[in-house]
Image (cartoon, rainbow, N blue to C red; front, side):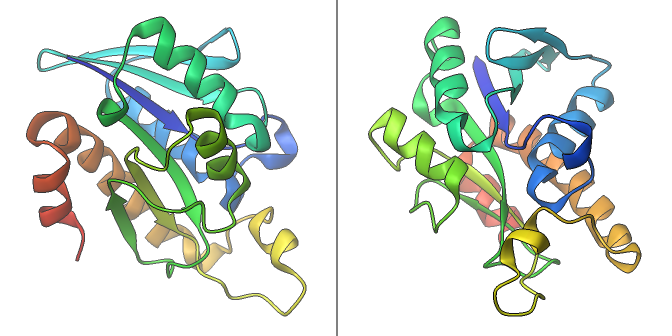
Length: 186
């Protein structure tokens, strides 16, 4: 079984450790846990991970957030991976910092990366892991908040959620979407 794990983010040092790049951070942690590494390839940094008979193609698109669909579609087609075996990891303003939610589908909720994926695939029916980043910002400061670094007091919760996200990715492949949602969506 092949799975495409897509961590959303932006390339460049200025985006490292920002809320918007949490998809990259989760992808990095998953690959490190499984002894892999990323190599630059077409439209993405790519890692191949084998775990318990499963094959994961893990990508971090180099297309920037707003064109994430292009990289996802290329690797989906190249590796012949079905929609239900794709998992997009994305930051979510609508969820508090403590929350993670696995969903089988849904709207883009104003997220440019998800909007591009939806436009490219022509559907909203693909699994996504929504990583809550909270919404503690003054009116009119959303962009600065999303592209900002985590606060020191947020880091323990973020690190814990990254580790849980790895467990969720493994569960998604081993037990399926529905059972993983039942276990982790609390």
